[in-house]
Length: 323
Image 1 (tube, rainbow, N blue to C red):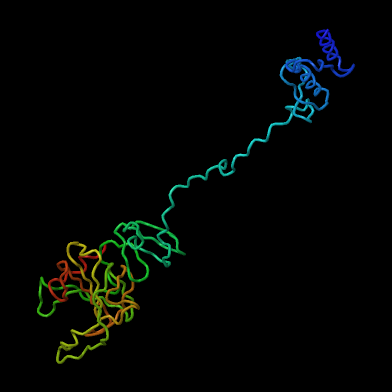
Image 2 (image 1 turned 90 degrees about the vertical axis):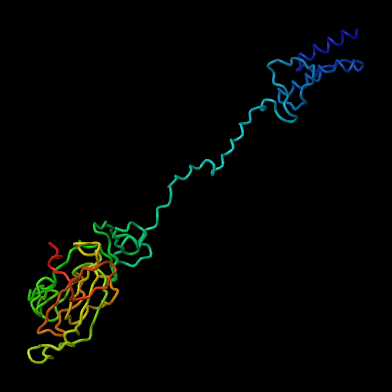
């Protein structure tokens, strides 16, 4: 009889519209009560809240939706969209900055005043001449004969090692140490020019001696002597030491002297480094001179030796003239 009642209860479970599923009687063993709980879980498919089906419930693999979490419609289970993917750290995904390589060296003209500079003053090749403007390199060239660091505020490429003829007309030539003519020795060449004519440097070099302050003393002698011995040894002059040595023998020092000058050019003094063609003095007639002219004398001496004018160390300037 008890078995018949259980079968009848199951029959009612199949038709839930006819009424609640009748379970086993109160005296049925608990081990068999799981079936009713499983059916209750199936009720979630109809939208009714219910507990999830227990073990041993009916039709566990049927196509019916099983009850979800308590209070949630079963047909919503598993329909939530996937969470947004985490955005990668912008700093990680940002493209790396292009490698610009090592920093370029600073401009050699930085912090330099406008003008031309030899490379040695800028830390570049010694033979370079760099023109600076507004703290930047405006131009750069290589000096074929090397660079001359002048003292006139603007360096320059060295000129070819040859002697430029001074201005004026030839008056008297060289006659010394080879054919003396009794008092007619002349250790240089005289060039006549109007008073005040500009005298350019005959070679690149350094001013090593200047004498100023003397006027004209022509006629100070007696008899046939036009000038006294004192007059003949006191005259204004400027002497330059060549930057490239003797054009005929670079192993020797070479000196150029301009005598009887009127005055020196502005800024010229002992120690001035001058460029060939730069104005260094003006034609005068100081000392024993009958008129304005330049006594032009050149000396070739052993390296380091002190030059002396009017000796056999004087050479004929024409033998060192530029072509």
